[in-house]
Image (tube, rainbow, N blue to C red; front, side, top):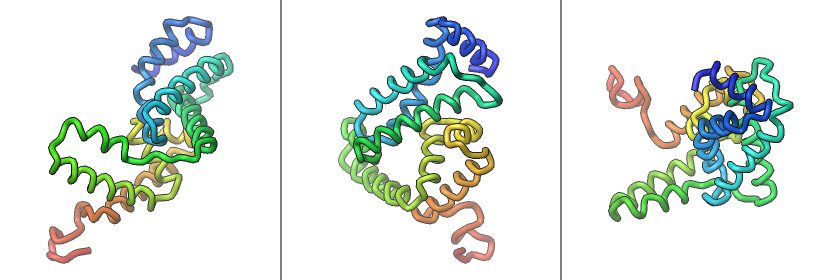
Length: 193
């Protein structure tokens, strides 16, 4: 959905147009759900929290003013705060186990073992990141937000989000032993970095 269409739908929804809010929901429900699901353990909690975010958005919409802040960033700030409230009350954190359970029905035993081993390594690598780096990665890659939208959601500058993302990816590559361009045995001099 382009920015102009979204701005028009937001304006219509602020005036009480239910169909306009429904179209906003249709556009953002999946990315919000992916973000929330990456932060909580149970799929049912992710579904409930996604609905809660949209209820909060509907209630707060009359007070929303763009002021240079994209609507998506505002909505994901609501999602982020909702997850924070949930985690504080539930004392649980997202893990990759739920993803592993999805594999059970679609892969053979060898594939499941390999995927679970990979997911365990990724989980350990993610835990080694700072909380801000994990959140930036979740917003950018699980939720599919732009750097600008992630910046609004986290209350940071866009350049800060790009820096967090860059450092997080570099740390994940190191932790997982993934060589980037110009690193490792494929360097022109044949040496490892």
